[in-house]
Structure formats: C-alpha cells, structure tokens
Amino acid sequence: MSTDFNGTWNMVSNDNFEAYMAALDIDFPTRKIANLLKPQKVIEQKGDSFIVKTLSTFRNYRVQFTVGEEFEEDTKGLDNRKCKSLVTWVSNKLVCVQKGEKENRGWTHWVEDGDLHLELHCSDQVCKQVYRKVPGA
Ligand code: ECB
Image (cartoon, rainbow, N blue to C red):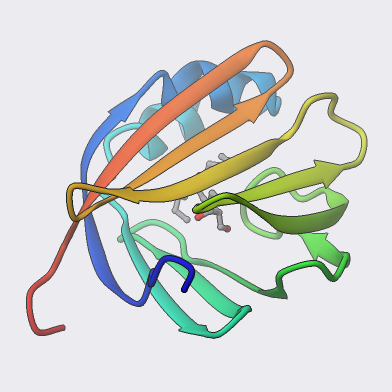
C-alpha cells in the first residue's frame, strides 16, 4: 500500500519560497504577494491517479496526473511555462521531474507524522513547505 495523500491540507510553514520563485523569474511584486499566502492543497487520489489543487486568495493551480505517465504541464498563472512532467514513486514519496527550460525543476511530496510535506526545487533553490490535514474535510 502506498501513502494516502487524500484530503484538504493547510499550509503551516513555507521556507525559501521567495528564492524558489526568483529562480522561476517571478517578478518582485508578484513574489511579495505570493510569499504572504497560506495556500491549501486539496488532493484527490485514486490509486496512482491524482488531482492536486493548490488554492489561495490570489491564484489557484490544478494539476492532474497518473504516476509513471509523462504529461504536458502548463504552469499557467505561475511562471507560465510548459514542462514535460513525470511523477514516480520513490519508496513512499511522490517525486515529480518537470523537464523544460528550467534546470533541476521538480518537487517531492510525502506524509510524515500525519503532515503533508512538499519540497519544491528549481536550479539551486529548494523551498520546503509543510501542510496540516484539515479534519473531516
Ligand atoms: C497557486 C498558489 C500560489 C500562487 C503563487 C502565485 C504566483 C507565483 C508564481 C509562481 C511561483 C511558482 C510556484 C507557485 C507555488 C505553488 C503552486 C504549485 C506548486 C506545485 O508545483 O505544486 C505541486 C505539488 O503540490 C502540484 O502542482
């Protein structure tokens, strides 16, 4: 049995997000706004099929994928790039490689002590986020 990521998760910490956004060439005013957000992750998982929604008061982002199947990702509303993205299981972690213009781009999700962890990386920058499960949601 792989990890169950289903649920609604609220951000509780966000380290180095600004530098991650700068690595994606996000402009200064947008970074200042985005850095104040406390987004929510809403994850719907059925086996290896996922819908991951990142919701905030400023912008929302949605991605849908099946583990092991490369897909075209359009990061519309974020840095507006196209990537060829592939998510795989690496033991109990969900690892995404986002191939495109930006080197070393991707993310890793895992559940640890009931919290949802996310590491986002681009070039030489790593952003670390933790989300707490909303009970009953
Ligand atoms: C959608 C909420 C954040 C909105 C930030 C708006 C502008 C900043 C522009 C670009 C910054 C780059 C990424 C934004 C950070 C989070 C959005 C989704 C990150 C992501 O790839 O999450 C994965 C893993 O959960 C699923 O898409």
